[in-house]
Length: 264
Ligand SMILES: [Zn+2]
Image (cartoon, rainbow, N blue to C red):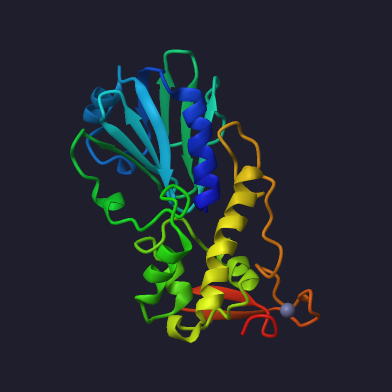
């Protein structure tokens, strides 16, 4: 599942490629991905010129010159390719541009391509929490936000309404590098470690963005990223750098990988 670094990268690449282009056609194969009728969707976006592409957490936002918008989410995973040929792999939507290129949407399971008219709110992204990159969140702001809560720190970080963009791939190493046990509740974690967590989120995401995201995700040019989370994530039974075996525990509906010695 793409998380903040992959979506940030995709949106920056799109911003470089499609601004100024005009949509000439659109074909929707998975109608439940869109939020209005296919015919209305096509009529709404055809002839629109792209003004800007940005992102927030796991969402890509395409703004038209008219200030109407498209909100895109790849759901459990998928890819968004910018190409001149219709991909052979099964895809759920195609948007064509006036330069001969197209954008193909492939969702592993289910994703969203929502059209929202200028001035209207999009209920799914309206409640998204901070985007630590896009919003230039300071350490002080981050600490205030986290320390206002009392529940599990890991659940807090994964909840998109608090911080948008952290998911099940990055979370394990973010906690490992901050030396925080994934089972801890927020009040049990020192301010020093929470401050460390802020630094780690920024540096880990910056590193991944500079490598075009995680090694198993594709960018818009059909290239895999080069980033690998390789401290504890998905390494149950292997040895941590300290020599202790990495543990896997169930936390809610997801699993946590951590080093019981390094993460207190
Ligand atoms: Zn360790």
